[in-house]
Length: 147
Picture 1 (tube, helix red, strand yellow):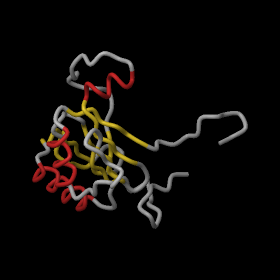
Picture 2: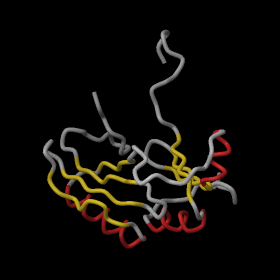
Picture 3: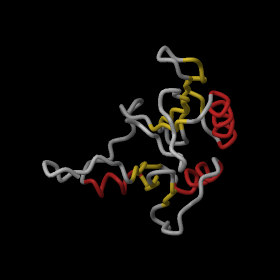
Picture 4: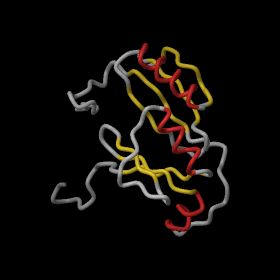
């Protein structure tokens, strides 16, 4: 944190509202993600390389935030992304996601910016991008090393 800001530039937790907690939990477990022991019957947590993913029933998440649960729009204006070390790893990750029940939205292909990218939807319609960006190096622990 800087002296000027009391809000650190980091994303610690992403919580997805889900229609069926058990179904969504199985999906992420089928991706090979490990459920945290901090999970409970009400909310499920998955540790990732540099943050935590939470799954929480949509209506309860809306109530917690103090907003109405009005249904899911076709596009929420948000995507989540997993950056990978090569195009081959993007293809392999998408295969794993499809086997777990994902729907391919955009097959992986070379991008105009020199990378390789594709998208899938999880069981609740949350969009995930799988990408290889040759301009974003990784640290030893798997985090992105951006200047």
